[in-house]
Length: 122
Image (cartoon, rainbow, N blue to C red; front, side):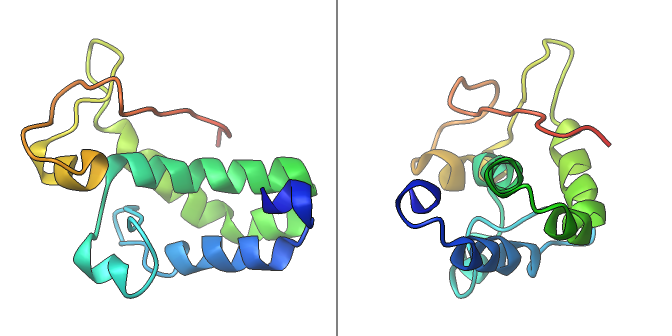
């Protein structure tokens, strides 16, 4: 909505940066920035949303310089969720992420609520 209403790109970059700041060495991105990054360290769905947010930012802004500055971290972030894609072609998410993904226990495995799109290729 910021793109459409104000075209103020600084706050969007700041939000994206706040998530990549807490990226783990294996590529995982946090559910949210500080201080929630410590409470909910990882969610499959929110991880993918962050990657899609970078794509949307670039599509709306055309800011190649910003995308280039994130590119190595972005590729690392893309590789992490790919390990969850099984022979069915769907993401098979463990119970470790389920509470952060769906806000309730007992949800895991292949669930249609977990959406993954590959917006950029490396």
